[in-house]
Image 1 (tube, one colour):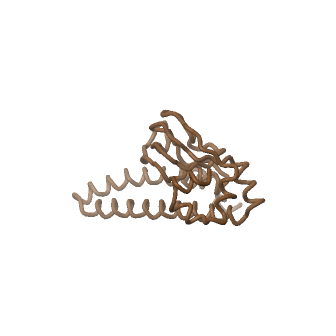
Image 2 (cartoon, rainbow, N blue to C red):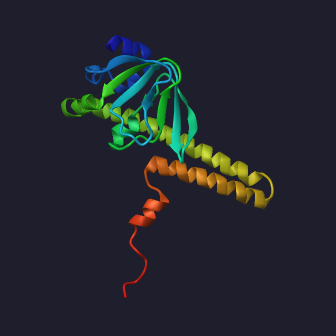
Image 3 (cartoon, one colour):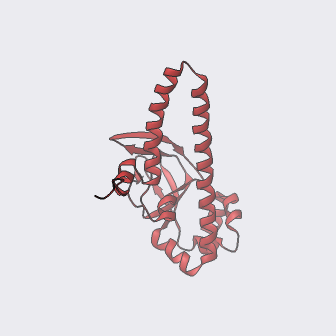
Length: 196
């Protein structure tokens, strides 16, 4: 397992470090998943952390009875990291688009790693945080690019209409990512009326 992992993921193995890699891989396994299999369900708690070794997965956000395709991910990308880090529900659905080879850790294995090899667990968490920060930066750049593009197009009336459509889409995506909706926030905030 150790040699195969180092061969499949040399840069990642280097970032995790030779001292921590054996602990990280002690109870990990490679598994094959056929095309079409749903690996993660949007808004469900994920029971595994996966690293794609081969193949392609499709990532979707499901809201209001629709699925919005966010993209495709392949070798070297993590799946299930949001649930692992937050203990909460996944923020998207993931399907195997092709036959996929995954390195798999159960939640129980990750908890064991935290207890028995905290340095290895820390190396893994740092890796996952770096991945999530890169995604946030990429999303921020994309959103900023769309805002700049919108400011350059058409009349003010068209810009305002398009901005409202995009704002609604962005709000729904952010609700999915944070788990907080305006409806929930309004229901949970104290009333602004003064007692009589």
